[in-house]
Length: 271
Image: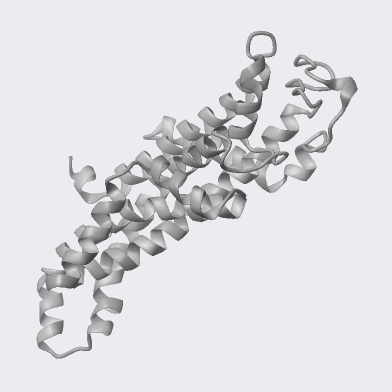
């Protein structure tokens, strides 16, 4: 797989690099990301500050390294929570019938009716700002896509002969779900998780850019881009460096997600 897909391999290495930066941020960051210095305000890249400093004298390289930790933490945790909620809702909608199915489908349709960013903004307005609130808001906005995918998979599995045979043998419904339904929908869900992480990071960064996500002085990339947009004409590195890091991570995660899907999805492999 790594030889056949060089772009996937390169993207995976870039992603692993960001993961290592997130894990070993205290050891890799040359400065405290929250430390401010009046003497070092808006220093251009080079010398002691490799990527320059911002309007508060904070080292941008250190903030980018620590920002990888917040970006991956918010992205992974929110996607896992959203996938868990989507799994419960999708399985219930796929197995239900009558008015229960109708009600669950209306809930899923209402979530899918709006973009993830708009839903996240609405949830942030209710929950408030902060890293934990952003995680909850992003995870809630992702439940709909996961639920739709899971419901589709459940409907396909439910029509299989081995599931019908289990029902005819009077096997308890929860046993059928645990032994036959869930094992056949978990792996497609895992593939969806790898794809949705980049979306979750983009939504969380967008919230911070709008000023309603992570609060200062947290080293968040979206927040850094927003803080530097007023100085683009003479200090472009303040927004350019975190923007480059965000774009690089999103592109790498997208390529990795597509590679995982193309490698393990039987429909795509058959083509």
